Length: 568
Image (cartoon, rainbow, N blue to C red; front, top):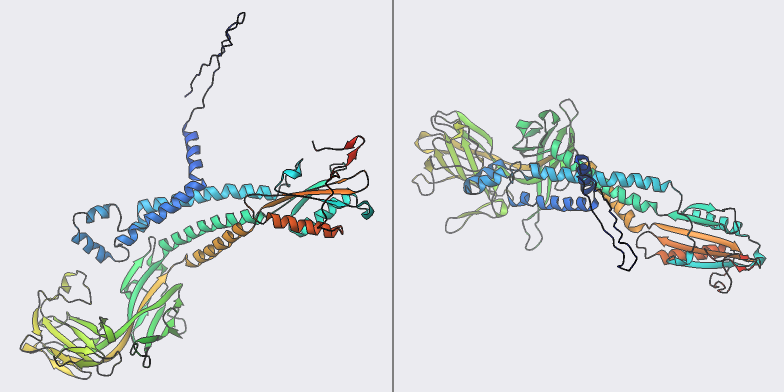
């Protein structure tokens, strides 16, 4: 669209003067789709927009720490929605339980990515051209520069203006300046010098590295995975989906990405403090001896897994995160058949490795069996009959249980927590408030359940460990780009962009007059120090006293027939 503007100009109302009317047409450019796209691209690729998007991304990540996230624990999210029916489903519709894979978080992420690229690429092209261009022309009045000085080479030195300018050029090149000498075919040769291009290079490296960090994090989120597994002594973990107790895949994860390595826990040792007052019995060192294989055909290797010292297999890192005891039990049903045999993981609940124990036996006949109780590594009983663990070591292990029979609910296919037993629909067999009493077992002992439901025996104790398994294909690249970003930031902060100009001229009495000026691009508190260093080098080059000021009455430009020549 265009607009026509009429402007009328009138002269002063003097007699004999006609009124002048001028019509001026101003056509405003039309904003079509192409122009709108250009304007939008300009706004998106500005540094202000990139900073705003970076801040917005940080704010958008906050809900991920306020609400449970479905990739981390779907059961917790389901329970949260059930406990908060009023707004739970509303939050789900806003993708607040899947923040980091939500449409709005991804949109901010992609816009930031595009904005940074749009900022960096044009600046890199412009800087490349600047690095290959000549320094700016020599100003007419160097005295107007922030740092300015003059030197006088006496006639007896016999150094003409052309030799002086080339000597100054050599010195500046040694200091890392890019120099251009301008003889100009006259009596006043000059030079322009520039250095500090690494400042903008550092700035570009910093912003490019931010892009690299974003890409690396995205790659890790798309193709990485993490999981947890509990390993009892003697157990082997194979890196397959069914081998995990809990598994969190990336957005584009494929099961074919898993390398079939294996880890077997041979032995787990804990060192407890037996000397310090107030810390007696506290664990001070954990060490897991494991046997690993990169693939089924690879040779076995003996390795040690410790806290904050993971092992690496198949591009994944395996961390030691927990430990405890696993009582070994054998349970026979009412028909005398072995319904369950092996270690049972005891969940730590209190001091001195006091642990809860849940045993579910769905294969028992004629009724399914369930046990719930606790395990004490070193059992003590108070005068009131309350049992507790007096030490984390296995000095007097004891297994205390209540037993139940009925439908455990496992046949319905609904997931259950292995560390919890829902006794609401079960019939108790043993408990402290029943005639049969509770079950108390020491290693090697057994107990016959009431009503012919079977037997349970306590065969021994093994240790177990909990491991976290992480695979992030972008982790190493994220570290590299983060280090590059820090290096680029240091360069941009500590390298200064400076320009130096030097002009020489020959006085009529044979002296060579030298004037120099320095200018910094941006704020540079060390420019005065650079000027002093440059003056010292020039004075040393021509064997002058650097503390001797220039003769103020002597012109710094060559004299002409009618007097000193002035700057134009």
